[in-house]
Amino acid sequence: MSSVTTPPGSLPADAPSPTAAIGPQTSFLATAGKSIRELPRLAKFALIVILIGVLVGWYLWTGRVSTDDAQVDAHITALASQVSGYVVGLPIDDNMNIKEGDVLVQIDPRVYKAEVDQAKAALDLAENEAKSAELQIGLTRGTTTHSTGGAAAQSESDAADYTMSQAQLERTATANLLQAKAEVESKRATNERAQADLERYKPLVQTGDVSKFQFDAVDATARVARHDLAAAEQQLAAAEQNVQIARASVSSSKARVARSQSLLLESKAREQQIPISEAAYKSALAAVERARALWEQAKLNLGYTTIKAPISGQVTQKTVNLGQYVLPGNLLCTLVPLDKVYITANFKETQMDHVAPGQRAKIHVDTYDRDFEGVVDSIAGAAGSRQALLPPQNATGNFIKVVQRIPVKVLVKQSSDPHFVLRPGMNVEATIYTR
Image 1 (cartoon, rainbow, N blue to C red):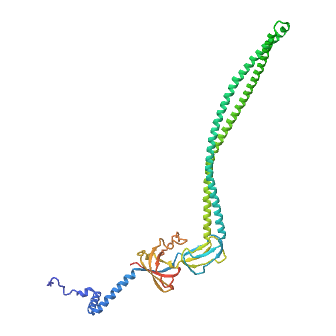
Image 2 (image 1 turned 30 degrees about the horizontal axis):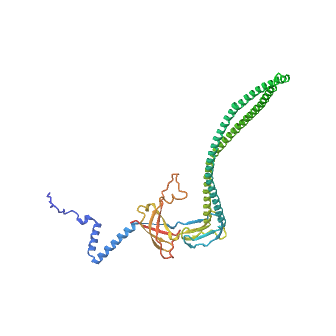
Image 3 (image 1 turned 180 degrees about the vertical axis):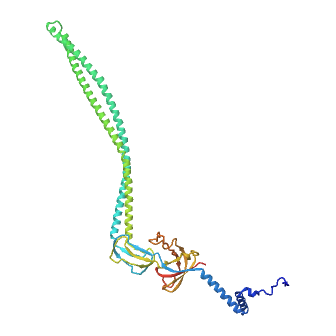
């Protein structure tokens, strides 16, 4: 057998052609490319523009997420009364637009005005009592200090007088009294001798044994001795009386010493009134603060009788009427700030991969069949089911996976046309552009 040598780079005679090896799809593309190359230049340009538009549309369509589980929302303010009373003024009506600071409800203020006046009078009384207690501290301190000093000086003076009276008593008793007694004894002895001499001279003068002159001298001596004895006895009596007086003076001085010591102790005890006065002053200051707090509370209650709008908005859900008696906590009305509404859009958790604050959003409102511009403000920290009053629990084991919804807050730019007003509760469709 003879073999055929195939030159390098060439195919065998029985090999399939390249076109047949590529397949029908490649043949179609080659044919389509050939057809495109044969199109006019304008048609080629139009085809390129169409392809670019399709690519851009596909890019934009895949770069957004939408949900129809969205509603208009707002921070609705519920107004309630903080005090009780009859409604004497009601300048609002249902669905009325009001501004911040407008009077909504006026409760009868007369009782609360009287309470303010009473609290003010109690505060004035407490302040005057505090001033009196403050002055009493200085008065008590000055009085007790001077009284203690005077009592101490008087006690020292009385003690010195007592010592002096005791010394005088001793001197009178030991010296004057003893001297008087000795003088009486001496005079008595002299008198007895003189009287005895006189008795002896009487018979002698009658018998003439002694002269009249001698008898008269003895008689004179006897009379002088008797008078000297009487004088000595009087001096003794005076000395004894002086002793009694000295003893009485000693007793009086002792009593004065005891009295002055008692006054000194009393003055020192009265010094304890100083901290008592200071404590009374602090108590009076506390009473002043309490009275001032009651006065402030009374003024607050008086201010609560005039209920003003904390925000601008529209009055809804008005439940109060003129002349009605309201109690603290009773709902009066609600205020809806129509100029500060936003959108709460509940997106599926599978749509939240590329959602972030600051992204552009489009809000389609069903009521007006109109689109509004918006921007993503924030994303909730938990799914809506977790924020429910009773979060779902599954402890039985028959778990079924349910796609959760994540609330997204979207700020919306409202229309300047007053007809297109967004009201809380309206259904909308939210679309967020993630690219």
